[in-house]
Length: 311
Image 1 (cartoon, rainbow, N blue to C red):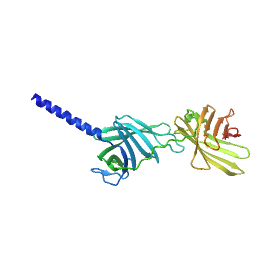
Image 2: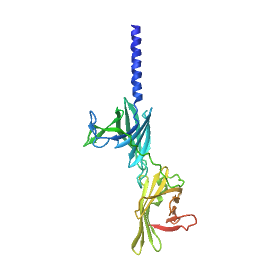
Image 3: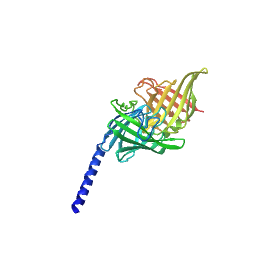
């Protein structure tokens, strides 16, 4: 009887070790493209559960996902121990930074990837519970299950993905402006907010909103003889621990960014050495409460200064 018990225990250990080996050998790596195939046992999602195409690099307990968010490739590396990871989302023009909080964990032979929160521009956090299950049905077939809520009712849905030789574009690195950034938040330039008017032969007007959600928005126009000769969309947003000033003269696209390089209680200097003109923009609060705006080009060129009065 003793020998029989030992044999049973040994057989169980061997069985568990084999199951664990199979579990560990499942490799989710590849580029996966959504297809029209119907998933087994669950309703097909009306749109791909995890987007039309994404890539996975799977090695042990590390899972790297490359996917398209806001028409930009984003890469996130998750650990399969349920650890929370913060991913910076592509920034929209004139909007502050936002982040997605995700976790990943093994669930039997599947992998569960969950979005557990969002941090919106300005730093407001929202808790979420969006779970997707990744199941390998075959070496070239991956099923991603999720939940769809419609009219207050939730139901399980899924999308079938096939392995593809096509590659997901790698995340593009931001070229930046070439200027050395200063550390600041939008609150450091709140004094720019308001309606400002000034000028001599031409009347310059800038209307700045107060800070909200990590950004300030403005519209500027230049008037001469009661006719508008120029206008500009402007904004200041929080990015990477600093501030970026974005200008769209006469609504021209793409916009031009200027990095905050120096800030004091009474001034803010933004620079873009790679731009033709201007290369530097500075706002200064004068002792009488007026606002001085200065734009400058290459070294030695005479800057253009306009003093505006608050209305």
